[in-house]
Image (cartoon, rainbow, N blue to C red):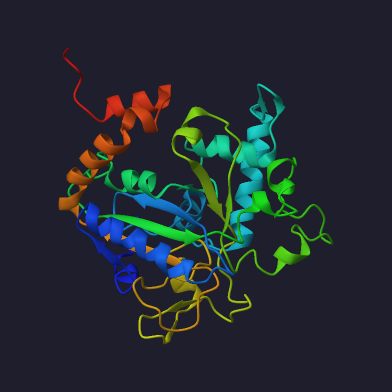
Length: 321
């Protein structure tokens, strides 16, 4: 996985313990409560390695294909094929009948199939737990590397609360995949925003893990140069605009998100605030202990299923008691 450290560094806030984490979340609360006419709501994502880009698993796979453009067209091509194969295998039926296409993606995501969905939590403390989780990586332990947490405003982007939101949760076709060459795959108010913003979806309680993690998904189109911003931009701390080529942005995130620096009020309020904080490796163990002692968060509570037990066991020495 590519190293996104240099991209995040100018914007990140450093978390060295529970006090600085609370300062970060309190600043977000205070900053946006000052604008009661435009309330914000944040979704959170925690990752145990601060060097990772903000990618969906499907986008990461697409970028690994030799010579393949990492664009929306390519992503949608693979996405449609995955759904058709899932249905050919007869896996598109649950206890209550046939699953919607979004529910099928959620099931695939749960079982490790690459999708455009990015796991999030609607709880900042749950996301923090994932950022400090004790776990192993492909190249060894991830306990001694810095973690990261993302905060993404989804106040106007939670599809469950939009009048067209049923299309995301109920239909048998994904709303962003066109059915004919003449039909727009999205409602009019979204067709110009799909690759210009990020959206969130709160799924039904398909399994115990989603409920335990206060879980949801972040999704959207791959950033395009034709979005209404001209190019996707990021606001610098001094209020200037840092314009980056679209392809450069795609190497750090699969969504059209504009990262901002916390603890500054300069410049025009962003349309969709997006912040990140780096969690020092030395703070991981104390933060894990705090979250377990005060909130009861542990592998047992976050992964309350057979797969969670299996993953937990494979990463540790065999028990002897």
